[in-house]
Image (cartoon, rainbow, N blue to C red):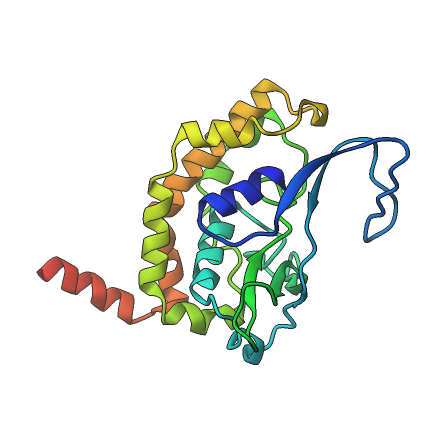
Length: 235
């Protein structure tokens, strides 16, 4: 979650304020689904006023940063985030709780979309290990994060998707190493696993940048994308 949240910030998405807190045996931090946090460094975010998306178009129309809906789909596809809207809902259910509508920094009567809860990025919740940068992951051509309710938003934001793809092309290994090296040593992610994670993040960034518009075209611009490409060739 720490790495993916920092990637989301680099990508220009709003996230919750976060910090790494050092817990001791006297701290009793409860988890939402039961149990308490163990002593040691813990990832924590600041609470914001708002609510999770219920899935309605009416709620989406009240979002002040609708461009970030398009960016979020590109981000989820980059990070293989199976825990928001998976590429195959028949295998894993969509999770509306991972779309947060914040009342902070939004005009009155509106909400601000916040990118949250990235525990399942890259590994779908599995532990990090050396063989993470596999061809299957790097070259995954499926779209992640595309709720049916997001489609009308993206249909009007092809240029935002293109801009987001361009942003991904600028991602570099130095930035990746800096983010990955922020993982506390107590979390037992060894040097080989960190290097493999960086390889996946960087390779995936280039692959998604080159292909995401084409992946989205059949659903979001089934006619317009083809016409757009033909106009580009003629010019």
